[in-house]
Image 1 (cartoon, rainbow, N blue to C red):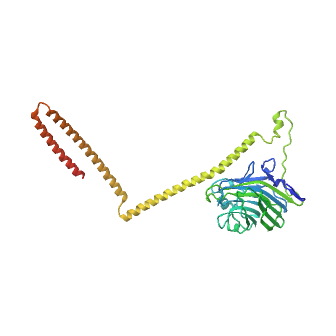
Image 2 (image 1 turned 90 degrees about the vertical axis):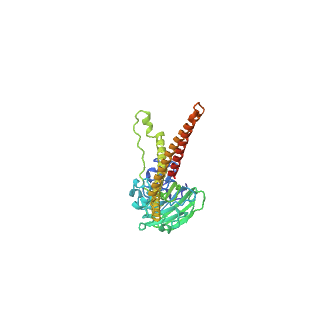
Image 3 (image 1 turned 90 degrees about the horizontal axis):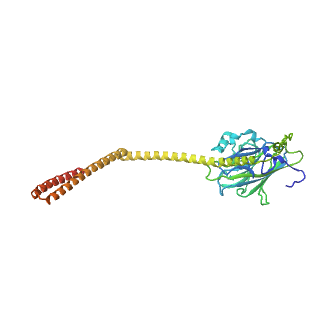
Length: 422
């Protein structure tokens, strides 16, 4: 990093990943979905309905400085998710006016922040006093994919909400920052003007977002905010927004910043054992790395699974509502049919079932009786055959007459049963 004469790098307002307490991690406050990881600072994960803030705790004591930072936005191809993020230089210390509980992950966090706390501009309050460079995904008035870089300026008198009509009237330039690799933004602040530029890191051509008059006061705070859009916007994933690097240069006299320096604990008197002699100088160890990795894994698991659980819950509730509506429609159709036909369909259907059951029982009883009669007839025929082949020839006529009488009676009964069934 080269410096021209008169430039000073504000070390506490600059960083390169990874952020840790051996450099400047202690100078920042992270809220909501934002967290410092090993390879970058994650502003928002690729999960919808998330908001995050990375805010510097100490002011910049200059009205003549420059901030340059690298970001990377990765997500699905042509997304219409109403998501975005911003870099701020404002008079208020945002981390002192909000709490971690406000940004706690829960269903509907983005509309809740806007309605209850006034946080309606990509993780920040739309009624701010200062300046911001905002990158958003959707054109407010058209609601179609159109990545843009906006320059916003406010003295606290206006409330500029994300994707609103007022935001669409601000200074902007179309710029394809999504899935474009690393993108660099540079904002030059001077007492009476601001110039904001953007480019793809691998290309040398800067695109001007804004270059004009603006009132810049010393003592403002810098920070980043983002949200991944409402959960009911579109299906699929949101964008993953990462902050890779930040460099702040001060022009002019003075230090440009006033941040308490970290002084490591003075080495105590040796206690005569190996652990005491070396533990004061241990920067990292196996346990701390394992805990850090576990923390990141748990954070990722919660961030990715909680929206899915909420979506599943909403789907079940929607299905229950649709089933209730279907039952109501069915009852209405049944009532309309009854009214138009003049018949009580339920009563007639129950009567029909009773008649069918009665006929079934009667048919079963008659079938059993007929089967017994046929078996008796077979027995009589066997007896006649046996006696006809024996010595008692004089009784054959009597047996045949008896058989004839029984047969006639059986035919009469069968005829009577058929008439009853008909």
